[in-house]
Length: 91
Figure: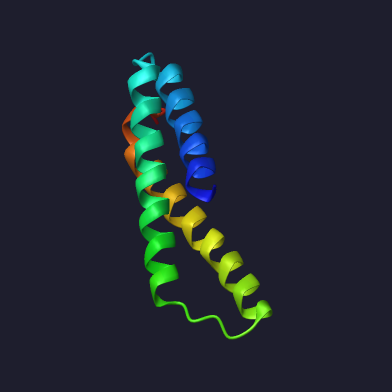
């Protein structure tokens, strides 16, 4: 469920940024969805492969850390990839 939520959020971000820049919002939104889905799946999958649950509290803490790391990675990559869509003010 987590990868699909991040894919949806990234698709909205990419689509809105492309729409504001006058670009094809549909293709940018699709690209953002793929970015969110792939990045989240990779981070979550690698984390699950390395994690050995010792208690219920450890599982909850691990899931919270995973969401925070995924949010940071997807947010940073989305920011980087949409830099060209921003309107820069001339000084």
